[in-house]
Length: 260
Image 1: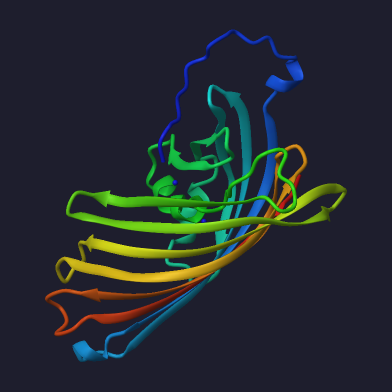
Image 2: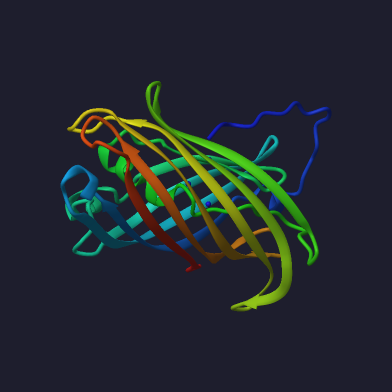
């Protein structure tokens, strides 16, 4: 849904708020993700190559009032993957305690996460967390709708890939999540991917598009109460290693559950 700048604003007056309004909120989440990818390398004299794996991440999220919105701090409690995960178990284990920071605008839009700990483990699991937090805010009511466009760049300069995403949101129903009253938000989105990445076989050009759907829940106080996403992307990768572009199909699913 994984966002990336800090918002700033000037205060026209000094506001005295009750202590309760300034107290940070802390919530624990479980993020379950699955990804299936197939590369059709027959055009390069190879075969179809497939990989499927899943991960479960347990995190603590602290949101604190800040000028222009809320500062977000995410602490990794633990991460585990199945036997097919491309990230070694030792790396996932060493990610325990890694921290990320982000920002949620007053409108409810999250601006992404960046690691505050400069470890290789934090960098490798950043992608697992980048899309877990959706658009939220207090006061959402059934019938509200809005749209948003984002652009996320991974990499630097010529070795970078840009993912553009266009989303349509709608508050569709009042529901109960556990003991909490919540609004169900639906999201329909499309995405485009374009850029270049280095590979052992030389630079690779990646381009294509995708689409997906989501349903998630926001409490009356604006707290995120979990949800589900799924996305399918059709991409092509090209370079000197293949006489023509190789098709790639990716299916990703994310489920976020509130633990506390």
